[in-house]
Amino acid sequence: MSIRSEKVSSLMKEEMSKILLRDIVLETNVFLTVTDIIMSPDLKIAKVYLSIYDSVEKKEAAINELMRRKGELRHLLGSRVRLKFTPDLQFYLDDTLDKVDSLERIFKKIRNNEH
Image (tube, rainbow, N blue to C red; front, side, top):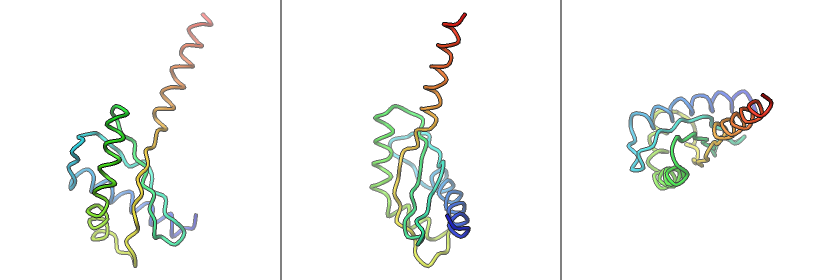
């Protein structure tokens, strides 16, 4: 990733986090965190990775709601981040914390079986 892409990603992540925290009220009412934004080399696509703390059904519903409201989010983002083009937003669920939790439970089981 180029230095420009990294800088734009960092700025986009900061602004998207603020938008989701202050400006958008989701119907699904979930707690979410923007974990990463990866920009395409031409800066026209932003892959937004979200960590959502809720049931699987609510996670899917939240991602679907964000996809439906993509235009609104893109407009808000475009008014805060000055680029030649406001990138198209793609939302993805970041399940890293779920995987870490699963691994910790496995390690705990292994430790308990050793004693």
